[in-house]
Length: 106
Image (cartoon, rainbow, N blue to C red; front, side, top):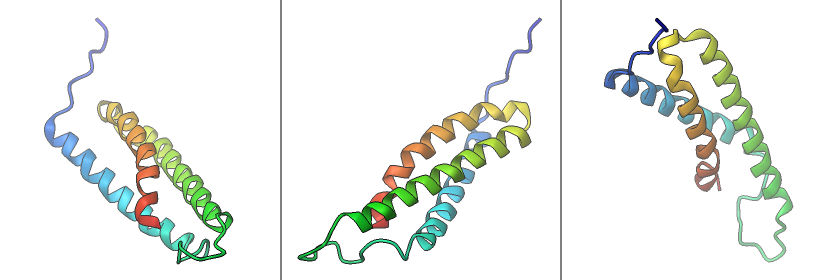
């Protein structure tokens, strides 16, 4: 008979959520520090151009994507098989969070 995967317990989902929140918090503050020299701090200037802020935005998105893909690769190899079903769901949520985290970045 085929190996039937067990359902994930609520405590395991909670542990995944706490790990996700911790990862996103560390990633946000680390990337905010990394891209702090890019862009304009005052968005409402008379001769403000979009280029410097665009560079900060793209750099943040690319670096966040690299962190998320790296975390996906590491977790999919290190976690036991019964927890791997959660990883892809948290990966998709992290991709959406990249755009949500742009709001407090500026």
